[in-house]
Amino acid sequence: MNVGKAFILGGILIALTGCSSDELDDLREFVNNAHANRKPKVEPLPEVKTQETFVYGAADLTDPFAVFNLKPRGSKSASGPRPDMNRRREPLEDYPLDALKMVGTLSRGKQAWAVIQAPDGTVHRARVGNYLGQNFGMVTQITEEKVNIVELIQSGLGDWVEREASLALAEYE
Image 1 (cartoon, rainbow, N blue to C red):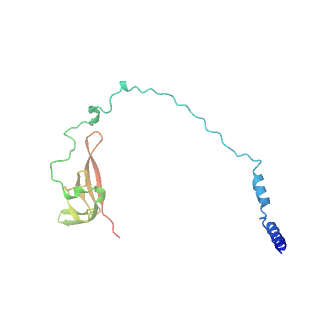
Image 2: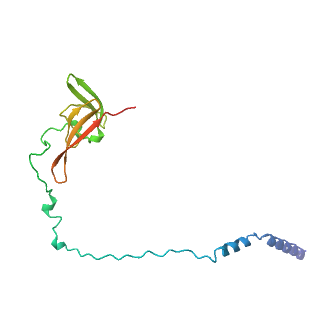
Image 3: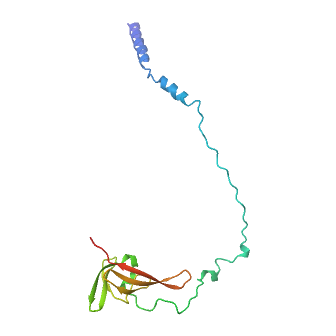
């Protein structure tokens, strides 16, 4: 009986090995042979350009870190515009000009004020001659649509230069 079981078991194993073929042999052969005759196109490397040598002669040049080169070389004439460093700073000078918003105007007779909102939410009024912004900006004109300002900024040479700016009335939805 053991021999019979062995024959039956052997027959089952032979039947199972016949079923184990996944029928993908033709696909494997195609994949292996599909690109066998083709060679990949490899572009040649770009030609390396040689650079001309340059000899830097620092002994003949001025020292860029010398004390006289660190100071601005401008004509600091007393006749040009200058900010008054001794005057008391106003509250709106603590904020950059682009952070301030004009939210309205007030007027009484010929006197007009601009209503300015600071980034912290506080509301201030400014009239012609008041200062605002961090560049010594002075209010020169107030209309219902905008506030005209003249700022004093320092140029690269150390001179003070006037620059016109304005705050337009902010639109709320």
